[in-house]
Length: 432
Ligand code: PMP
Image (cartoon, rainbow, N blue to C red; front, top):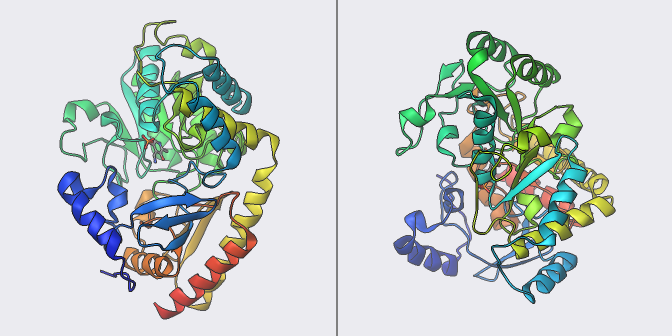
């Protein structure tokens, strides 16, 4: 296992203490750096494109809190909106106009969404969307794709890597076989697998959930045939198409991946960017479907902190900036510059690699062929990724701590930041 060359005593002490207090020392497993080894870095603060750790080191941040920080950290407009909200109160458990503003902004941006419900995490959004699909159709079966992550919803925590249309088996202790019996796992981009599943189970399928641009096995893009088949088969069989845009929403385009790809979802789940760095999730879709949710309809879903005033303030401020300022072209330029630089660095070092990118979401895979499914993603050289990760970290560049995560460019990054990252990658890949 590769370890960092640089020592970070304060992070090491903080981790040792945390290990006694929280399982694995963290509140979300990826933060423990299990996939790359070594001690996680404890963060003290962040500003713009940078993170600062408890040892006083500064890093260029390509995680952006795993997606939300598209404007960088502490964007002045977002901070001002938060301060204003904070001066009024932190939670009311009663409706506010800010909730309607955030709902309106989402509906305005995402073409397929006519009505929306705010929740507090991506997991809640997907869990609720799946319940709604089942409640609306009166059917039980949900199709998901190997390597797609939809939060820790019991029925969606089903073994990844299955190459055939098999009935799902749980992959976490505590998730019962019963919970996942109605989840069908298929391979991403496998049109014939999808056709077969509908031919066999068509009248039982409540919905198909997918990441329209996958971020959770590294970046994987759907083929046009796959997109067409998803639209066609769900419509033909009366199943709901659920686009999980928790990561891709407002990230790859203002209208989400569905806008770029021509997907026609019945339901869309959102999170990350819609909360501007605070805990928000959302699910929305056609009014006729959404009106099945309590109290308009009978499908239960609720939340003490749903539509929280601080979270809605940060979300509204972020979406307002994304609507009014043309940031997506700039993100595209920065990210394509980074893609080209990383590609040249790996090519010059003769390292088998492929880069997948959609807008400001990208993965450098250590594998010679294009990655279209989990079956292929699982063949990557993860040991080389760990070496790359720590080499970059020691040079002040904070990348995702796993081969199977996307990196994110924010509008706070500059051309100089990108060039510094490329220079660091040239050093690391040549040394490694
Ligand atoms: N769906 C997708 C596509 C995600 O990437 C994530 C989180 N990475 C989730 C759902 C779950 O969101 P949360 O962590 O906010 O529960």
